[in-house]
Image (cartoon, rainbow, N blue to C red; front, side):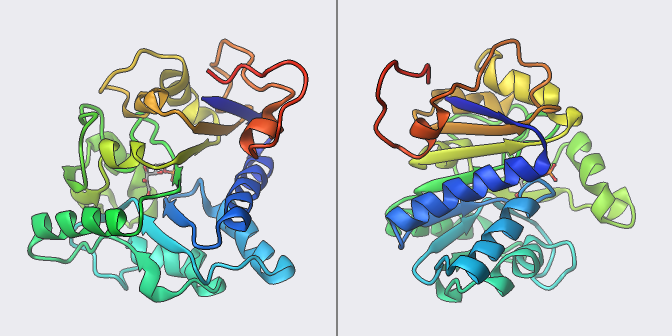
Length: 267
Ligand code: F6R
């Protein structure tokens, strides 16, 4: 795991965008796993800028979003379909045929989840999965207690998550109680995993994810099992970490450049 600590949200967003752009330059038909929420907004803004100013090309990219609320139609203001359109897809040249977001309105949910998993497999698997983290340690909507081997399925949202997300709705009563979410097993199969977090409300969750024991009560700790996990955080989210995590050679590891001299500690 490589933990990179940046000064602030802007710097986190830019570093994350550099990583996505790097992988995209190396593989134009990248299979990209995407997240919603406040955290990746700066990343999407920077990728949109790179598309406009530098011609970053998404035309061959396939995307899979982590999750969607059950019961919200795609045009609902708080649906993740709408979020992704407004904050990313409307501003880049991704081919809509290659964009995948779970459908929160399907009646055959289980069949839909199986189809989603099959589509990921058919695409060759996710190359780079972007993740945020809940204050309770969830990744995607894998709430505390989710199993390591879980696949795309319906999860009941915890009270804590519904309270966190109530800021996007008129009241907590409007926050859906269920979501379709990729499983932890699904996420861990991505070639690279990029976990982003900012703000001191994420500090405890980041400490548990990076330094805590591997436990289902802190689902993000499961990324300790991943061989290419990158954690990019601001100083506030890193404030509870006990170790010096960033290394002078982080660039080489992040962008897979040859390393000369001593080796960085990327355990
Ligand atoms: C969203 C998702 C969630 C969020 C998490 C953090 O697709 O998978 O796990 O990443 O709830 O949300 P923010 O970034 O709003 O703090």
